[in-house]
Amino acid sequence: MGSLLFNNTSRGHLRNIMRIIERSDVDLLRFPTFLMSKKISMSSMKDTVTCQEPLSQAPPSPKPVAHIPVMAREVLEYLAPRDNAVILDTTFGAGGHSRKILESCPGVRLMCLDRDPVAYKYAEELQREYPNRVFPLLGKFRDPNQLTAADILSHIDEDSLYKVLKYYGEESNARKISRVVVESRHLFRKLHTTKELAELVMSVTGAENPCQQ
Image 1 (cartoon, rainbow, N blue to C red):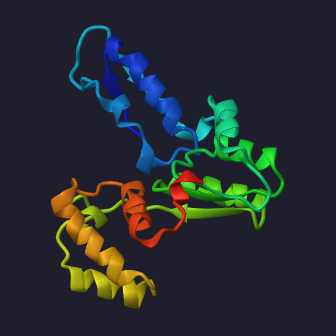
Image 2 (cartoon, one colour):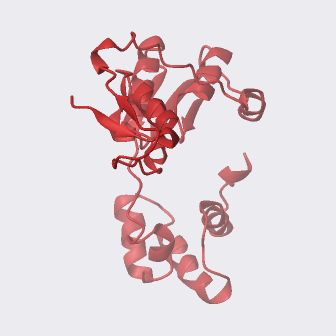
């Protein structure tokens, strides 16, 4: 590599960047762009220094720092993991909280969801430690311009909704549910949550509300 000139102001900033780049475990796709936010002057200025540190002489990369969950106690108290329970972790990250859940109960199973491919790999590593108990899922968030279930329920006609519930959901109360959903647009406000929908369905079917279990 050729020599590059940097002023003293950028020297410490550059070294921080170099330390990160020299680590072989850094995913460049996730390289923190904020480190590059300061412009490094390439013009000859006063107090310039020459940077010739070879990357090949970098020390062995350290093991990744373990994620320390900061709300482990609260999570365990709220979820109260039990045998045969299935818990969905929708923000798996580095898996610190998920690991605490697995350690707290030998019979609990975890669905580990994250849109980050790096987090997905962490979930796969956790799966190897806890076979048949951890199930990694690579989440892909929807296009915000796509229709939501709430949008469909606020516009679909009764017959079309009946067909969806009857033929795809095999719902015996499809007619009652489709009718009350359409009528609710004029009697109540728009449905926004699954809890609101469940309560509406319960009002015509008499079924127990799963949201209160």
